[in-house]
Image (tube, rainbow, N blue to C red):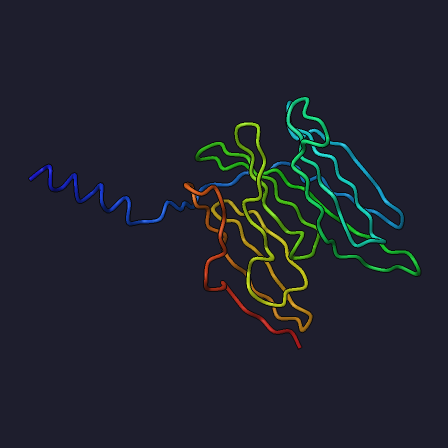
Length: 194
């Protein structure tokens, strides 16, 4: 009898996805404002992790180079992303940010990149000296023009909006096995502003 119960419990574990809702803790956000021209920065993420950021509003792009230890620039985890820009007079400007986030249940470290554009709203994961993309907001179907991720104690919330003013919020669910996030199928809310 006990063997049957244990076997049923083991089978049930494989039938359910390995997703989790954990507690999230965010560190201080690094925000970069660039007005015209190109700006660059080199910041420490931890004692062995570094990030080089270059923002070019004139080209509507931001580049991110995640480095570990004494890794050379050419070996970095590199991302060239679109960013939203605004024009003030004849000068374009952009704001991009990187927010370190830690899953307090397992200690895994993530970095939320926000350039304002869906293709520039990512979660980058770090494990064992390697970085990888764990979520890309542009993967959510729709004609979204802006995106951001909000860190709450129990959830990460993806905020999307389009040119017509429609907004959608999605809870991001972490898949432990794949090490990635997915937006829940149903939106938390949809609002049209007229």
